[in-house]
Image (cartoon, rainbow, N blue to C red):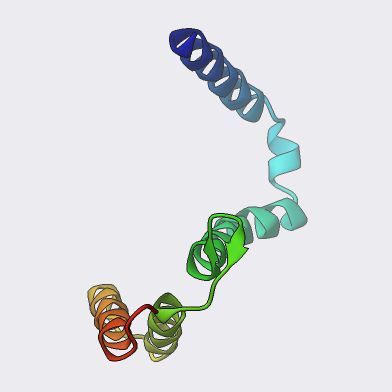
Length: 103
């Protein structure tokens, strides 16, 4: 059953990619489509970060992760290098968890 699901998902992904490749070039050249295509990955990544930051299973949860993301946003706004942003976020999250056990 699992292999059947994997095969169906693989065929679905292939067909989805094939449908994307068959979109006319004139449609892709429109400014609105190009603007949406440029912003869509940012929006999807922001939504993924938001969901992973403030949820645990089916519950909303505010804990140390939110402090780490806040520090990462500030560091990104200040144009810090990406690796430094990751380190600052991880250290902040660890410090908040150490300072406030259970968070």
